[in-house]
Each structure stands twice: as C-alpha cells, then as structure tokens.
Length: 109
Length: 116
Image: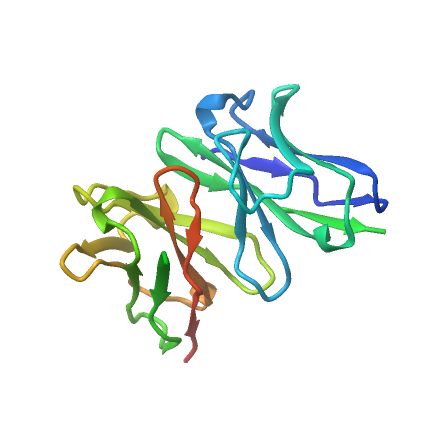
C-alpha cells in the first residue's frame, strides 16, 4: 500500500507565496497519478481546488496553481490571503484507486 | 442546480452495518461517477471507493475490501455506501462526491457514530 506524504504544517505571510507538496512512497508523482488538491476549513466540507495536476474549477481563486515539481505534485499559493488559512489535502490515483495525503495545515500569519 | 443530498445522521452499535444514501439532482446521474470519502474526528480524509453510475462498476481500497459496498439506483438517481462490521474507529463524517472531471460536487456529509 502506497503512502502519500505532505508537509504537516506551513506558514505564509499575507501577500506571500508558499508551495505545498505531495509525494508518493512508490516513486515520482506523475500526471498519471491525476493529482487533486482540496481545501478544508474547520467545520466545513472539503472543496476541490485543483484536479488532474493543474486544472482549476470556476471557483478556484487565480492565486492557486497546481504543477509537478521535483517528482512531487505541488500546490502554489501566490499572494496569500487570510481566508486561505485552512487544511489542504492532496489525492493521488493508483490504477483507479485513490489515496489521500495526511494534509497540510496552512497558517497565514 | 447540481446537488447531492445525503441521508441523516446515524448511531450504530459495534458489529452493525450502516447504509448511507446520496440523492443526486440537477444532472444526468449516469454520466458521472460517485466517490465516497470519510473523515474521522480530527483525522485526515480517507477514500472509501467509487462507482461508475453508468455501468455500476466499483473500486475499493484494500483497507475496506469486503466491508464496504457501493451501489446505485439509477431510477432513483441515488448512490449508496454500506459499511459492515462497524467498530468505534468508523465513527466519522461520510461524504459522497460527484466525479468525471474534477470531483466537483460534494454532499453535505453524514455523521455516523459507532458506540455501544
């Protein structure tokens, strides 16, 4: 069983840039893992920000972008806002089965 | 508008089964897949499986093989997730999530509490 790894916590200053990463114990993350990124605020259901590595939904703020970086999936937030403080989860596909990472608690401070 | 409305909260005893429903509206049910995701209190999201609502094909993670069953009723545009042999660690909020491109719509969540 693969393990999907994320930074447990990160801090970014308002207006700053931060990159969250998502790695796989099986090796490099590729587009074939169809990486997803979700944002979850306390007491709320998650919402999907990024799918298939870099695709955005209509509600995804332009300051969020997805990519592959150094063998991992990456979520970059450029110009952080206080409302971006949340837990962020990645999801990878392994031959159709899905696996979430442990989540990254992002603090905007 | 597109909506997924889940059934209400459940309280179950250890060893029992629970069946959560997810009523879809506002789109062609059989054109999409449906995932089930759960989150125990203070824990990470956990993928439980999915179903192709068109042909009924399913896929489950190894962890839940034999204990989870996802089905759908196309006439009722409803997906179901049944979890058996419940234990305290199954206490969680369970979500259905529509997918074909983007896991774009989430249900409101159903709280399942397992307690003796």
